[in-house]
Image 1 (cartoon, rainbow, N blue to C red):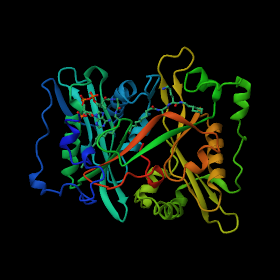
Image 2: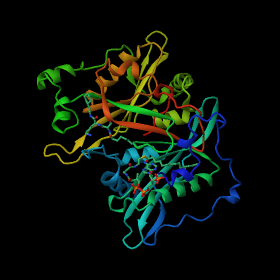
Image 3: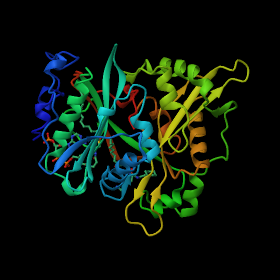
Image 4: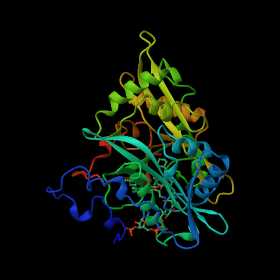
Length: 388
Ligand code: MYA
Ligand code: JJ1
């Protein structure tokens, strides 16, 4: 059924629940001299390139490929539209390797037709901190689908990760492959219900009028929590401490240092937004919330071409109730013109989703580890990791 994935060091469906298999790496590392030194062979018309994401030209090519060929919902109404600034941010974290930004071009025309990326991350699994690659943005041009190009892309990124002496990876996908460590649900909070209904993202509930719906999703004009403000550079040490303390409770979570927090959580216009609560008495940072910006192209609508979506990222509450903190995040997102606020049921998100009028979406997100076995399927609330 999965000719490629059955050949890979990942949890296999047939091994589910076998208590004789130990948790941890499935295969041991090999000496670097034994890692294949040449790229995998591509079909004749294509060639590998390493994408230099520092240049505007390369960023634009990648942006066009993804804008026209990346992930769609199951009814092909919306397609992710990561911005160029977002891609540069996502692909150049501390310690990134340019060799992990991999493109495939048509030799003759030089057109970019496929892409896959990795970025390094320290991921804690239970008590062990593992150096991993986070694999993302796997994309094959629509006209080249089902030609088994994806397995070659995955083998090539694996090879280039191995060359840096890294032997594990994590990734998410909308599809079920061998074998998810957890299955998460997308939830959506309408901020601009009229537009969401107009573009077919949501439907008018039965026994609901448009004006009742608009009223249902109304939010205050500004956040309610005293001391709620945007995160600044000077907050990096405090936010790092707060987040590190919080992420300890999850079975799988990133191990962020201050450099990571500065990169991933310091606000970057139209890419990532972060807020915190500073105590008026002690000036301590007690709470934190963040979201990233990922618009979607609306595929065939007369009136709108873009849906502006915010995605819940990392949130920590120690003093302000999480419900109130996230309500303030919704208020900020609404103020900034987002149409919808999305969240997965990871971490402690279940405590606010229903209460803050999120509804379940039709999409799920599967979380995976490569070359690392876990003997249990995790609950979404055991995950302290959000990939972009
Ligand atoms: S998830 C986002 C993936 N991208 C999209 O969904 C965009 C739109 N779709 C496409 O561009 C294509 O349909 C893709 C497949 C490229 C997805 N992850 O070439 P094929 C398997 C892994 O004929 P195509 C993200 O970016 C499929 O089961 N495998 O198919 C994380 C089959 O194998 P098997 C996938 O449709 C990516 C084989 O590919 C996925 O033309 C993590 C068919 O190949 C998928 N999303 O192209 C990648 N979809 O026969 C793994 C299909 O066995 C990283 N397949 O069933 C692993 C870790 C690597 C690093 C390790 C370091 C140590
Ligand atoms: O966005 C998603 N679904 C939307 C739109 C559905 C359009 C028809 N298929 C949805 N809307 C309902 C919202 C409603 C608002 C009021 C309250 C009730 C709910 O459900 C889905 C997620 O639900 N998104 C996708 O399917 C996109 C792909 C998801 C997999 C992503 C793979 C990630 C790649 C890894 O890096």
